[in-house]
Image 1 (cartoon, rainbow, N blue to C red):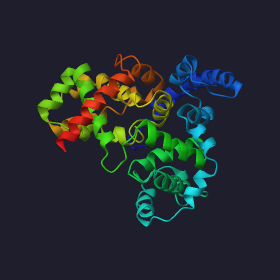
Image 2: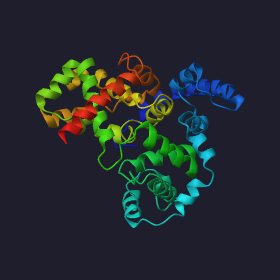
Image 3: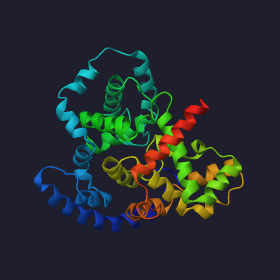
Image 4: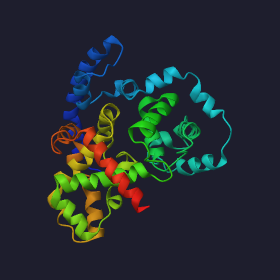
Length: 318
């Protein structure tokens, strides 16, 4: 937790949220009695209201397609770990191990077992699996969260594959075209839905990458509170990358007046850091309700169309 973390406010929120969690856990246990996790309107509604921690790994694996891929490729993960060595890949991963959740006791070298070895294995296997990506900063935080939730190396690998390979493709490739495209897509959405903020960004000459790159590349890990990130990921694995835009638009819309007070680039950068803190983002249940109401209509078809035009523009710029 950061030094300025409000423990009292968190305890107050969590004691009331605990009641919600208990109620959801009973409903999920009933839903999962059949064994499978089918894609349905009921499951979508349940996921939006939060997946209980004890069911999260199973639900994420099922809804993302990771379970099916793992079942279709028995032994593949372990073969990747025994593959030909790649010193550059290994060094790049090792460099980031100590920087990954240094405040989390499970990732400290002094802990036994230390999750750094698990994290190294997952990232190394993924680098061998997807050589076009290899390893990129940001993936360590994502893999770290997956390991904490699944407590299973192989499942973490297949979930990382679902995210990096399918849900947010091209975020982590050397050119990062997918990441750059989606930052531009957010800019287009802000211009359409929150024109005053769009106009301010243009007037001050602020590039979207300056203020939101970390939101996208870390999928809100170490940006928003843990429980809020997990609730976002519940929906991300089920509904895809449009969830990222819903979260970003909600943060900006909720704090629109505060953002509009900015008079310079450093000022606006600071305001975008501030809007990811406080009770609005801590109270994850209310926050998640807001992401589905505040931004209004946002279909994957709309996102796909915007991606096409933004990508073409970026490629034309070289």
